[in-house]
Length: 361
Image 1: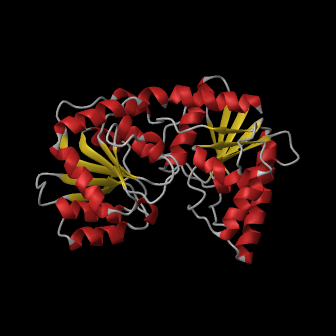
Image 2: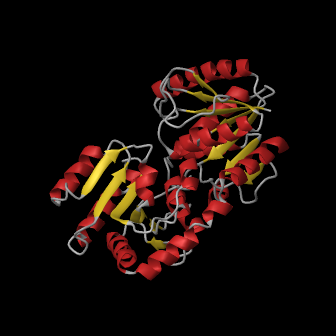
């Protein structure tokens, strides 16, 4: 089977990591696999030598009601269609809701099957009226659709169609499988994600400030990059915590730092299926997560393999962090139970579900 993925770029991110990992697995299984990106940027994640990375060579634009942008999007759709037709793929997978739209347009009236994906919370993530309409409109024209959660599928259809599937994320980071819980953890609280509004790292900084005097030896590291860097740095400075909270940017080796941490925190307002939370749990790091609509509540059984707190609740986040740090028995229980994800969400298990689905189209 000749399989293609379509996405903006292969920079650091959840969809990007999933794409690289799935493509590597498919190629190793003997499938001709290509990743087509808009931007001419090298992959942040390692790619198997059998995987082709093809760059169309233009930047992604946001779709909106602006006529200029709509015409720009239409122009690039024709360019993508021409590019994809020349590849003669059996299937093309759009690795986001916007990439799904391009995928449908690029494959319509060709022999290439169009597979759409929803990798975030469609009820909230960029849920403008026009995006909501386009999400549901292009869903109808896909040959298959993959959702990460049952809740996400409910946005599109009351009853899951035969051409659709619910496949959760795998633990795609291969380094995770090589790491085990340390005998002694570092006095460290970790978080990972884009420095944007959705991740609510402002909330996490506030939570740490609330309890910093009670855990004077602990530090916090937030790995990631994004448009809110300056704002977050100013917030850290306002608490005079520059020596205890650091923003080192994206780092291939961040998972090794997270593995040794006392606590991992996901403070997001919304998620699809958070890779970083899954990785931390699989390594046995005691985790605190907000009850975002999608993802965390399908991964965490409260107080058994992690702790769930209300979205936007600084006080609950700080109390949960303290509870884990001050209760070794709880920390050990959360760690041991969380590592079950290594079996249920392994790369092989999830990738095989993808292949089985693609073969059924």
